[in-house]
Amino acid sequence: MNKIACIYASCFLAIALLSNCTNKNSGSKNAALYKADLKLPAGFTATIVADSLGPLRHLAVTSQGDIYVKLSALKDGKGIYLLTDSDHDGRMKKKMGFGNYPGTGILIKGNALYASSNTGVFKYQLNDKGMVTDTAKPKILVKGLIDRARDNSKSIAVDDQGNLYVTVGTYNETCRKPNSGEGMAGCPLLDSVGGVWQFKTDKTNQSYGDAVHYARGLKNVVGINWNASTKSLFVMMHGRGRFDDKFPQYYTPKQSAELPAETMYELHKGDDAGWPFVYYDHFQKKKMLSPEYGGDGKKSVEGKYLDPLAAFPAHLAPNDLLFYTGNLFPARYKNGAFIVFHGQSPQLKKGYLVAFVPFKNGKPSGDWEIFADNFSGIDLNKPTGPIQHRPMGLAQGPDGELYVSDDLKGTIYRIGYKSESK
Image (cartoon, rainbow, N blue to C red; front, top):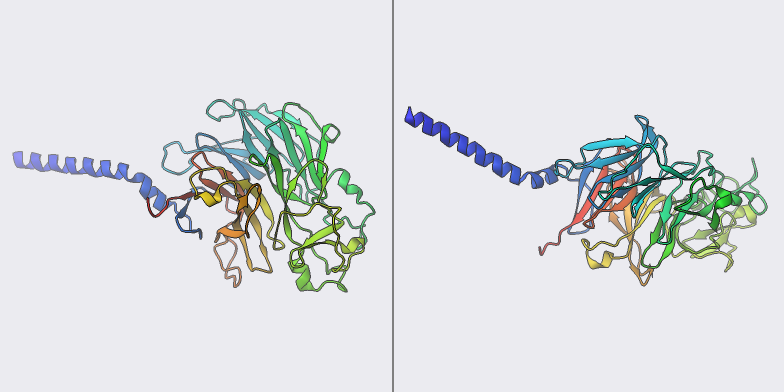
């Protein structure tokens, strides 16, 4: 009997020790379980922190590591999710929805959460833990912006002087007259679309009449960010679509598929990037006169319009922009630009990736490079199945991690770094 009791006691002790070891190692096991199959530079790792959330757009991370993410379509009647890792196992299991409007933009600045619909911008008060104090009663900062369904996302940025910047894309990507290849004289659409408008963060119910028309000539901007280092606004513009449909005498189908470039601009008040009158040809490295306004693929335009700081292959669809300010990643990434490309390039046969542009003294200092790849899950050169994920939004975590949202499967990735020497 004593021997049996001893055996039972030994068993219970072994179980307790095993349970204790399992708990201690749960973090590393969970990290392995949630590992994402992304292609990253040496030393970087990616894990999945949430999935199956719906059509995610931009996201913001609090100082506590909680995540706010915007949805382009309502899910269960909600357009914003707050995600928390309640048991600290690396997964955002707790989800709370609010905001009865779809949209794209969301960011945290000071003690406020800003979120956009497709026609305006809302402001929510945050407590000291980054939680919205009243989800049902946001302040309406901006209303009445143009929404014609196409290119209607309203991306947002906030500077340090209480200014709110809102992008308004155009529903007519070439400003052509109906059923014609001819451009509208002066493009009257530019009064309300194709640019960035500046509002105030402490004033409610603003509309176009209250705004500063900060910059124009930007066909569709989804990626926008205030650069705290340069104290200026940066944007990524989607290039226009086809040329050969109306101008086959000037452009082959291949040229039409590979032009124009997607472009990065640093903006200041009054800037004009030239849409729809010009486009940027990254092969010739020139601003070219658009065929709707007398161009033929050879006529360049010098001066007059803002030059891009960087250019990227056509149709990559830059949908978010983030300047990295953390200390987790190697020093070369500090103050550089991460860009989400939501589409694919016929020229490169690549896409659905996160790119990086190194910066020095506030300007690009080298060629762009692919940072995170394989969101698609297939070889885009020889596709064998449907796209698995499309990266959409970027955010920096409190420890310097990079978060990426996906609008196809509703996945959120966290990218970290650990050098081999550690």
